[in-house]
Image (cartoon, rainbow, N blue to C red; front, side, top):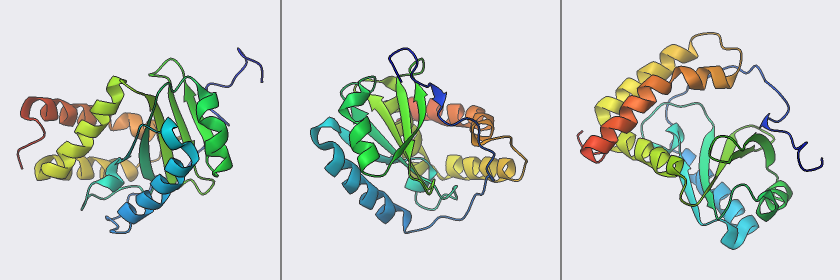
Length: 186
């Protein structure tokens, strides 16, 4: 594709997938570590930070069995710095959002790992980490979030994005609580 015709949004279009929330798997951190090693090897210094985020990063929290990985790049808009290397390592570009924090998301062909790329300094990095850390430290918020996810997973969704959007209110309230208490309480 030439510049200006690069696909944005969901690469490949909407996919209807079952939303399945399972009990916490103590193997999730090891799976993250394995993929973090692959990503670090592929990107070298282009990966300024690699973090396990999302529900699988919170011990004891039920989750969709999909490992979410946050990668901080110097400039996520500069796909030439990471896209060919991630593709060579086996990851497939799924989301390109130049209008939302220059976010990119890759996934494994098995769809069990999502790699989110943001630019250094992007506020979404700290929001994501604040949410994870709050859930790790606050049992009440962890229970509330798990209950919400289980209730939503029992419903029919046109795609995974609709399910994710339905969680927004509870996620935002947990992020807000992390900012007022520094993630403590629990």
